[in-house]
Length: 287
Image (cartoon, rainbow, N blue to C red; front, side, top):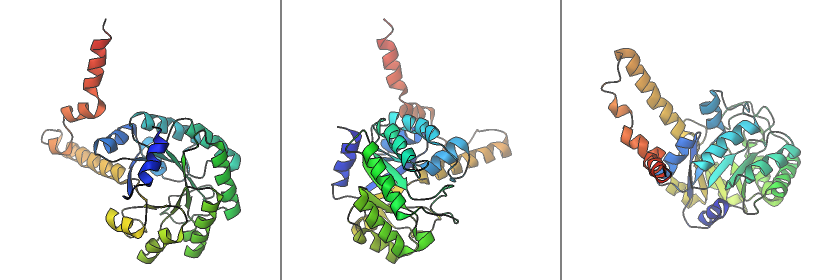
């Protein structure tokens, strides 16, 4: 089964689809090992982890594609890819979707921000017109090599033009062909509740610890009508915190002795990276 078909099957189920973020191939593998059914290739996380830059549209399409190729190859799960605003106009969107759909990813997330784009929970955003975004969505649908590819349309209009405009955009983007709608950064519980009820296609929500949106559990979000919840950068933030603690201890004590509780074991590392399988293949091909 294609990964796009697998994702569509999950979306047809009764349970909300939980998509933890992966900014590296190893994180994608960890998401699968933990038992989740979907991986989210996070644009912000890849900018942070791979390039040590903020989420301001500084990563180009080819750099994102190279990382996503590795993420997609490290897991058997459906991979949802954040392609920002498609890296330009409708023609750029066409080429971007063509490139990513050929990888066999399950879904693409396209947003309506102007360049330079910003994290959905940053101030200072600007959005393109509804008409221009609708044309980008049409270009994306035309360009896909996979007819089952799920297209998620994201709008950042709430922070720019208000909640009603965001809902209007969500409806228009669904009419243009988007399979799911993602209204970024609702700021109140009432807004969170209203979004899935107002959409004609399934709704996506992004959980950002310390961000603008109220933190709610998966069960509550499912009961409100959401079909997908993203935890885009929680794994990255936890990993950075763990690395900081280890480095602080090493700096303070001059040794990693006693730091075992801050690190996975060598056996765990080998299990995650498939060391035993590589050994088996090596033996098979020795001749």
